[in-house]
Length: 95
Image 1 (spheres, rainbow, N blue to C red):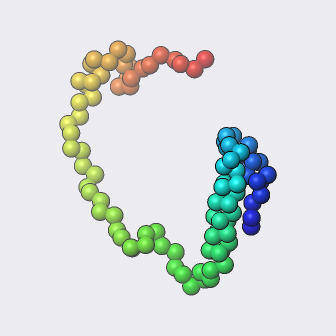
Image 2 (cartoon, one colour):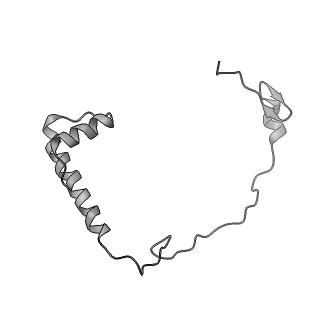
Image 3 (tube, rainbow, N blue to C red):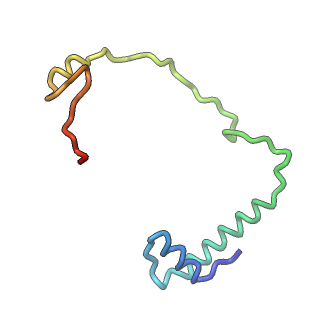
């Protein structure tokens, strides 16, 4: 699929992008190349390819979910301007 300059201008308008007239031809060529690559990739037979989450089949190292700092809720709420039932109260900002 090849994009024309009118297509690029329309896409830019829909995306609310400002593109200079000098760059329209470059964008048309680059976007056409990307679409051509996607067409090539769609033609590859992937029927026997197993989906994978990571190309190296790596496992993420997880740490134990343990609190590393003491609970200082009372200390922080004691200096807050307005607290109710353990929650910080803030002024209403939406009318």
